[in-house]
Image (cartoon, rainbow over all chains, first blue to last red; front, side, top):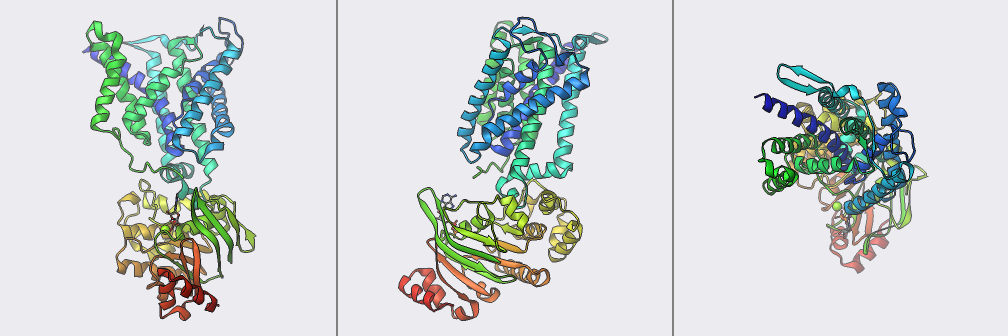
Length: 304
Length: 247
Ligand SMILES: Nc1ncnc2c1ncn2[C@@H]1O[C@H](COP(=O)(O)OP(=O)(O)O)[C@@H](O)[C@H]1O
Ligand SMILES: [Mg+2]
């Protein structure tokens, strides 16, 4: 029983991280039909933003030493600016391109960010201690829950609630939903295309920044590809959830995490190294039966 | 009010419009009639900024609007009700209706305008909080017209409002459009495939085929429908003759 609850909480915490990243990816896909492979690098950038730029092996905290509130805001700002820059410098010039062209452009952006980080910070992974207090375990009887897991779940819930409120209750959010459904029609009604797209990039930047902080706290190490695995799982989550649906992206994040964590806990020992293969097999099986994901969107019109 | 000259639009190798000239005066109801594929929707998209023409000019109230973004053309007072309705299916009726006023940050008149439009389309009030995707075709058509009018356009472009609707509902839609024209000094440009209804509702008619205007004239002069039929079905020499004869 205790084991099961422990596993459940592990899955919830991992699912939160996946859901955050999947929402960031889903937002951009929803508005732009952009499958953004540079999203993982935005997460990486958010983590590197905390330390003093140098090629040293040890990471010296810079923004990472600021008070938490200030640090979070600063990291969000940096990642949001990077996301907006990637739009201004690259994606905005190919608005009318095919989704496949956009995706390939995002590989290029990813390459640029990764190599930029390599140039400034060097190629060696660094260890970095962020919020080490969060490794403290809260004990309920036999149950030990790291504070970080609670913070991760809480942060995700807060962000998801905020995002929902924004999309449902504010006039900007309603414009975003309209644009996600039918971009051209929204513009015919006066919705500013670049404003909506900018907002989508900014929001996805905030989500990437928070994911970066949580990820770094958990792993304690920095490398120029640290965001990539998270991004890949987030992509799988959006596909599982149904591309184009934010609710689906979040649900997909939790679904993938649950599969992963429960396989890890209950697979026979000798199969555990291949856990991800099992996860992917489940995903493929699921897509055979529900090709448009858990929560399909009907409005996947190609934008002209 | 609207003046189009030498408008040419291509999609890759397909020429959709070639040398189209058209004008609309304030508070007119002008109809563009033509078969499927004639270029009617392309013409409206070009006016509303949704496609980039290869050549030509579009002036609205004396101001060139060709090359402007769709959202800025909407701000000039032109609103497009496109073919196939395009409601935002997951948004509620209310959200659909107000989207233009949110976008233009002009909400002074929004509540009063909505009230007025709901007087015309009471069905929408009953569906107020439902996703627009659940409305019937007729209700969706009413919603998109009301939604376009919420932006307070002076020129309303309506692309094939009768497509896929029962004739009785189409009549209601037209009657509403015309009384809105009277009461709100609205100017109408409407696309249709058949001229039958337009002979009752419009002041002037353009016949378009293969991306060219083949005939235009005042509705009362085209009332017998024969010149229109000739232009529409493509007996080109006669259509050209009719074109000479038209004012
Ligand atoms: N997005 C598009 N891409 C390629 N060709 C198009 C596109 N839209 C319209 N066309 C072509 O342009 C021509 C005019 O189409 P359209 O303006 O839709 O005519 P109508 O509205 O009168 O039926 C047709 O030959 C059509 O096939
Ligand atoms: Mg058409």
